[in-house]
Length: 277
Image (cartoon, rainbow, N blue to C red):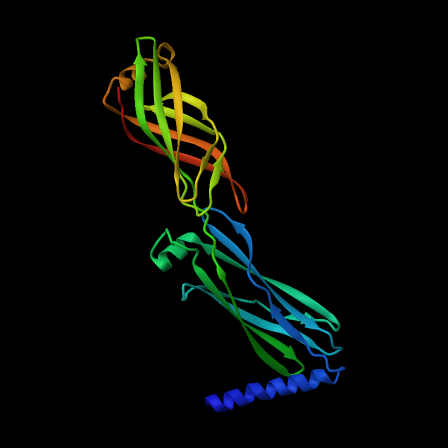
């Protein structure tokens, strides 16, 4: 079918459907699509929801025959989907079809080739709905635009490990946790509850640092002072503290507030740690 004939056919269907509906007091079925609503956000991505509403104010037969959609981010196709089965719309009633669109941060970053975009990536949802009435099926096209928010996990990094004092029986160690916030809003971290292992041995369990505010795209430092009972910890820890560097594990938990509610944060890291004296 040529483009001209195709356009004529769609126009004819539109006329026929309109003519059929307007016999009922000038009313006709309506299809609308809402803007995207954020229903879930975490460190992995976001879930968007679009409401497809079909209203049938007439006493005639109407059916949402099908719909299909595709999501573009930064002008490139990221995801697509479609309906499975049709839905009738009773006379003088309406239906609301919730279209769920999950978006993974990793997919977005691969598409735009960076995991630190300066602004939230723009998205476009394109949807075609097929509305049936009698023997006719008429497509209706929609476009909705928005921005994808990205929630970044604050980073907690152990640094500047210093043995301030050490005897055969006890030691005092001091170190910092560097706190980094890659979000474009400030965050308030609750108290940090952490655990420390040196040379494969537990050194301190569930010790705490006070709450900290971290500016948008900024840093802060949480300081820790630990008094260690070496008689209890044993010779492995004693010898580890005397070395210039040692294997370590540092893990813990905290929580912080975001524009989308409170989020919990677990962190864990390991490697070689330089010991200062």
